[in-house]
Image 1 (tube, rainbow, N blue to C red):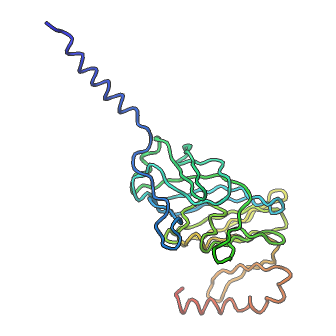
Image 2 (cartoon, helix red, strand yellow; image 1 turned 90 degrees about the vertical axis):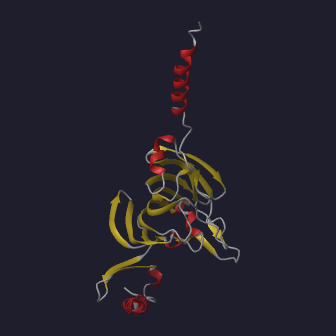
Image 3 (cartoon, rainbow, N blue to C red; image 1 turned 30 degrees about the horizontal axis):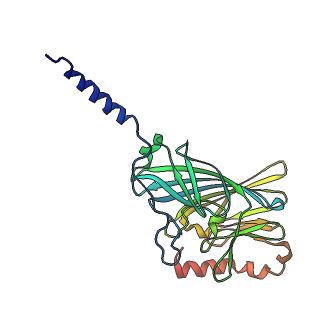
Length: 279
């Protein structure tokens, strides 16, 4: 009589357990690179929707260098095994997803972020996940086919970031198609006596040594090409309109006198805009 047949059951069980423990990474499929925009086919990415960008930027205009940390909060619109971000020129130092190291591959302006299997539950459709990308380098000025320039534009004493239509990828990684709107916290640290101006409201200003950090917040979702930063020597003023809207004006000192009449009309311009387009 053959007594060896029962060994097949333990062997089968061992194979099942071995297979269950050898997952190669996150289940799902990679998000699309691009959203098939007929005018900008490679712009934007599929598989997720960004809800918030937290950008920490350290700008050194004299050295033409930017160091940044982008904390990107997004909601998966499919089960993701990987996803893409748009970034032009700057060097990626590291990336994490849900606090765990993620692999980064690059093809031109396209970053592919591939998380490890430890965070796969956070990349299921409908779940929210956080990606942190650390990067640095000399930001690029992007020249469009019509010859216009955007991205990171140098000035005599600093720089200004212009986004429309594709320039924002020159200074922070993201989903840079205007259909994906998000809120923003942008904190910019610059050497004194320079000032950093950005979107929304100035939340805080703090100085450490010879450098000052300016924290700006935009609470209403906006397209990434609207995000901006201006670094330079400015004459600044804070005030309110008769309706209580907070104003922050920053003017080149050499243009302060010539722009006085224009600045005085800002409350009227805002009132007209509210009447035509809503508050």
